Image 1 (spheres, one colour):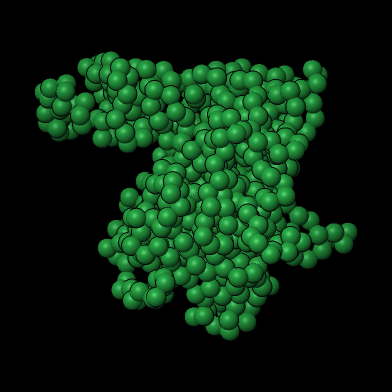
Image 2 (image 1 turned 90 degrees about the horizontal axis):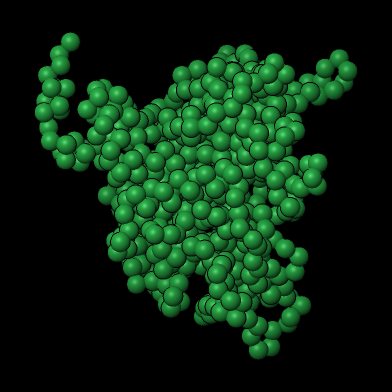
Amino acid sequence: MDTTPVTHIIGLPTEIILRILHSCDFRTIMRFSMTCKKFQCIVHRSTRLQLRIELDVNGLEIAKQPLKAGVTYATILEELKGYRDAWFNFKLGPPFRQVITDSIASQSYGQYHDEAYFEAFRAPEAGEDMTRHYPSNCIRVSGFCSSTDSSLSLEFKRNFRNFFVDPKQDLVILIEYEGFSFTWVNIHLHHLSSVKPHSLARFPTLTVRFEELGKQPTFYYGNSWIMEHILVVRFIPTNRKKRRVCDNIVIWDWQSGLFLGQIISKPDSPKPTFIDKHHLLFFSYTSKSSSSDEPDSIPLYQPALFVYRIPTTTSAVAQESVTVDGYMALYPPPLQPTLILELPKLNPKFQFFQLMLWDTLIHPGDLAYRKSTQIIHSYTKLVALSLSMIKTFPDENSQLPRANYSLFVSTDSIPGHLSKIRSEETVTILWSDWGTTTTRWFIDDYERSSAKTHRSTHLEFLQSLNSDGQAPVSIREFNPQIIKRHISDDLDSSERKKVYQGQNLGQVLEQTNRIRIVGSDTKTVVHTGFEEPVESTLPYMVVNRARPTRPSRWYTHSDYLIQWSRGSFLSLYQLEF
């Protein structure tokens, strides 16, 4: 074995080694530290390197801004550990309230950004019929820590149906269209601070038209996402019964005005999510004929994860000229997925009737917390999916057996798969080559409103109260690196059986604050609906915490738990760390 490269590294000054390691991910750093005693000491003694590891493990990064005077890496590291532990312990301070809406003027639910609540409303104009529903023309901004009298109203000189805000870029996007459904939409780009057209936007209005899809299909607005200079807008066909009419995902560089591409997702596909700043993930399906010898045979639909790489401005096609008041692109062929991760093959006697990609409470670029410095989320660590299937034909009891599953997917392996792709062709990876070790399956019995994913954690408010009359919160952590830092007793035979069958231990734990760890050596096996038994071994840790009450609606943003209260209030609980 040639040891020359190792000899060269050993001879390098410590400062050079540290500089190299700061450009590596935490796995590379940890592997490097195990090569010899000297390197182990270098890694262990460097506070800055320990901070680099801790940030990467948690999918976080320091916002690009100068550190405050007197702030050290040791301080940031201690705060980071406190933030991590506070979420797992559900350690929250006392509640305080914030007025968030005028129930008469409010148009819709609002949005949380940068520790503030944004809500659209309409300021009535002279002569308007107050019994009619008009588009919004204002946005109310309520800071979490501000007094109720300091809420700010932003008045725009135009009507809009929806909006999206990015305070980091002083950007608000107004979505304008006529009625519930439409064949065109205008996207207006404004400064959040001054409400004037955004100075970084080459074209303050972007226009999208759908005539090229044929027979004038109508759409309604789905969602918007902003990832730095990338703007993604989803439009959903109003007639979803026609399976040829698909969701249309439009991608722009909002600063240059360049149209970067469109994604035509399959009908009834859930909305996508960013897994990092450059890739969108969809939960959808592939289709092929059930028999190659029969051209009219029924197609087989197989669930899969689709990863799309966002095109760069240099790869964008030639654009159309500017119109009088806006800008519209010439649509090129739809983008193709970069990577397809197949799920297990369905039994031909079953078909799925619902796919769901759960909302994640954080996205890349979102604020995690603000103390001695700002910490933001760098990528999505975990995605949660639901898959519902039903048997195509009744059994002997005239029943239609069905199966409902939830599965949690660690995204840690996706960057590695993407880094190996060297061509423009779509790469497909079989379930057997990726799925068993990076997923954990459960028999699905969740109430969607009470369960959400946050970082690598799944949070669920359970239905029944504990013996103390409090509302249990089931916390499941799916990050193997964090799980290794905790200990628990071995699972007993009853618990192992429940894990094997896909039951959620958090729903059967009787003791609050008792940690249970399910390692990769304890597998889950599900059968119904698949050609072969499906094994999954992603480790997870579960513990139940307690809250005084069970909220009907809740959310997390930054280091706050947000509960909707009766009336026009938010109840805000901030993490204590």
